[in-house]
Length: 196
Image 1 (cartoon, rainbow, N blue to C red):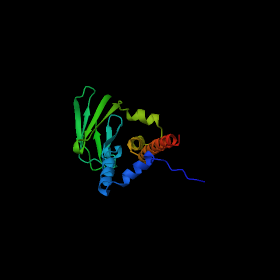
Image 2 (cartoon, rainbow, N blue to C red; image 1 turned 60 degrees about the vertical axis):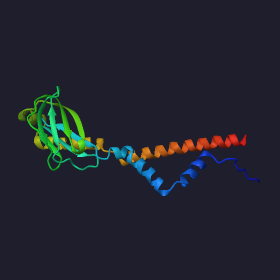
Image 3 (spheres, rainbow, N blue to C red; image 1 turned 90 degrees about the horizontal axis):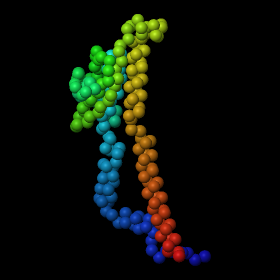
Image 4 (cartoon, rainbow, N blue to C red; image 1 turned 120 degrees about the vertical axis):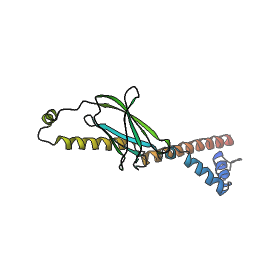
């Protein structure tokens, strides 16, 4: 059976041949550029914040997307109009506390290293009396329960804000898949035109 050879190479073959003809330095430069401009690299040190109301006390934590804590960064508590009510700095674990915050809507603004900034909105409820809280949860330590709920809220917020490696790999796989499909489709069209 005779073999059929196309009169001109497919675009996919030309793409591979053009890639092979580049010097190793040019290939390294293209890969470095792609890595530096990818969304994962841009978001590598984004500032993240967890914040929750604990009966008139606002507690939170600042950290970067690579899970390192933000130490000694300024955090401001602003009212709905944008006026600063309180400010503090994060501790060694990235935590911060605003005490005696009245009922209302507030903005919490944090500024980290290298100009990183994050803002969150929080509604603060009026503190319950100790007798009312104990009556709603009989036979339990209300303060310990509040602490556990606050920790769970912070863990949940951290989990929601984390950039997952599976998401990054899925995006890269999608890009390669679409590129491969387009190269296959174009190569198929060229081969179909050559046969006719």
